[in-house]
Length: 189
View 1 (tube, rainbow, N blue to C red):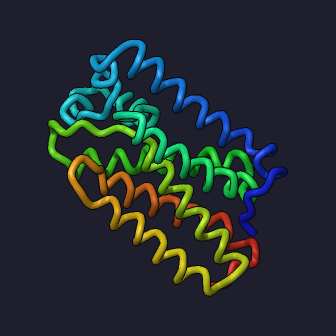
View 2: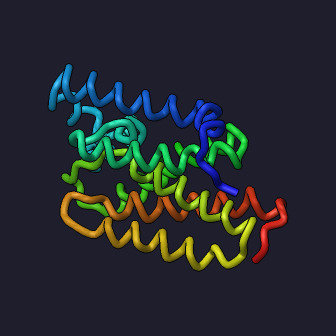
View 3: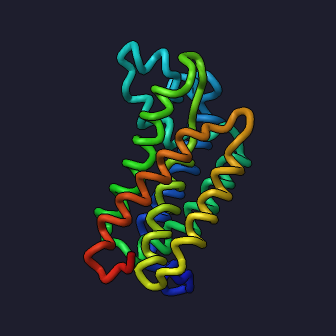
């Protein structure tokens, strides 16, 4: 079961490191270096097609403003701790980074060339998807709740300046990878 208590927070080393990296990146890049460096490291599809593939990874650690950072870090904290309690460390790391990468990769193909995309949302949606698969392992009725929950978050992602594709495909990767990991752990489907 996914439980957030004092003990699970103490054991949440990966989650706390990821939050620290994201917060430090914001203050070093956004505040210290400035907007030019945010643009240099963000996902701009035209630049990725020209060979700047690093942007698919660096964009994961960038945030547009403090509210964007705060929202992603709250959900990283909430879902990351649960994931860290129920998945092996390597599984957690794969879920986090591959969800972000897959979300950015699909954004590369589905968004216009000049769009600037950044943030850890694809990673966080992957954690949400994997968390749903952990819940289902304990309670098969949780799949309906989980899908509704994920759909609610995706619905909140519809709007200007929000990369729905990173959210959608990050979440789908988390669901799929979470299913594959949990299918041999008495998951009920």
